[in-house]
Length: 463
Image (cartoon, rainbow, N blue to C red):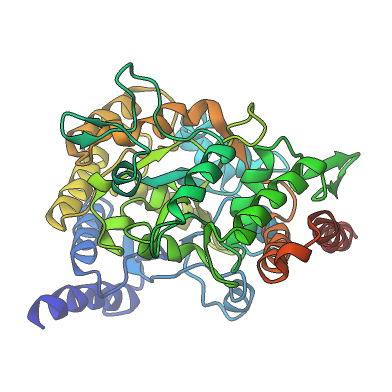
């Protein structure tokens, strides 16, 4: 109990100091990405960073205010003044949040630091509206194919080299599947095993549609088309129908590990024993061990398969920091300064690199898997130093994960630009219908219905 209470008490003191007791002249910065109280190691780390920052910048007080973004509650929280000054969301959201006047532009403040010139161009584009920046990217992720090497190797689908199952052949060529057809062929043999299936397919919480959109691109589909200044839904593209037909065949033949309402978080409890393949984001791979208790040595992470033999797109998204509407310029400037004390700026400063190192040290002490990351900054001195530091702490067998990270720059595909979350929900419904209707499911009709649903929402949003 003592270990739990001391960091919580320290965090409370930080909060109290910022709310009274002679601190009325301080500029209070309410940090929404502050760790939850039960994550004591991370709380202690953030407290160290906050104290370091406030010692150098006594005009500010840091107040930890943990907040997890929700599309259902963000509007209500804003209306009652319950949002922190800065918080995290998804790359699909800033445009909608800007239109609803929930977040503010930070264009002038970011340009004053010069960080806009160091920002990854794709991420900067995702955060720019009407020529102004509305966020700072934290990091990126790409969807890829996570595979259980042990299951595949034990059943003859991977070679054994030097006593270990390898995702490469003796000549260095890939031994892992690169197409959905290959996954289906492997799944047809794995189904003979008790309680093992080939592929995990999601269908709820917008997770199925999210992954399916990437599958459809890799069959050659275009899911939204721009006509003039408006977007038109194109979910019933013949290539998307082919992708859903693949899901249907896998479901009808019992090759999927799924339930009618299968969600993304199912992957880490399934990938150890129940399923050979799952599509996941590169930013959550550590959860295989942390939440699923699966050895990272049993797994490998490779590029998304192709459906048409040509496309290997990886849906590319990420997490931005956004600032609540009404937050003052002075607060934005203070928070940007704070980023340089927590390893989140592109500056090659002592504090910034020290914070990154401390973050890795905490992860190491917590026995967490440390993998490569997709950083939000372009080539430069800071990125070189950050990557060099990261390389010192990576503790997985890198060749098993390198295929994805080596290819991500050439495979990146942004999420659909208009109402992506609404699109995912419409596609979820189509996938659930395939799961329940089996042989009688009409994939073209289901995607036409999903297309109509999305188009109605696009038309409504354009009014």
